[in-house]
Length: 163
Image (cartoon, rainbow, N blue to C red; front, side, top):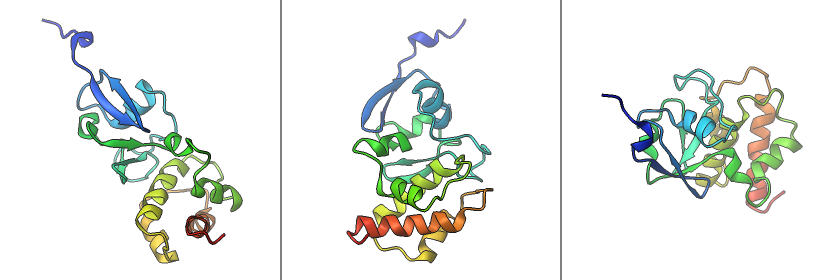
């Protein structure tokens, strides 16, 4: 007996404020669904083991490694990717990253942005140590760490109304 994938009920997801559906198997990594089924390319595959942070997205506002999170685990939860941050123009952190010239290759940046956005949502006045602690799990080989930290602090100031 063969499994007819088209007859399997779809999984309903809330991604970037939109209801989306996929027929992916329940255990398919969220990253694959985002990239392959929904066409959202910002989150990247890096290591596949939660070691690099390139795949981080927000699930109900919390940073999650989408490379190991089964798509079934996010049903009924709000998933936000970098694409979802720009509905009303670039997020303050995106603007600050540009102003600080914090990106080099940019491969790791979507995950860093999402973790930074989560930090700023939870702590509107982070210290440098707070920022470094929040971003510690991210691997960036370009050496722009100090500029990234400055950008998060700059964005915090902007969000507090202090440029």
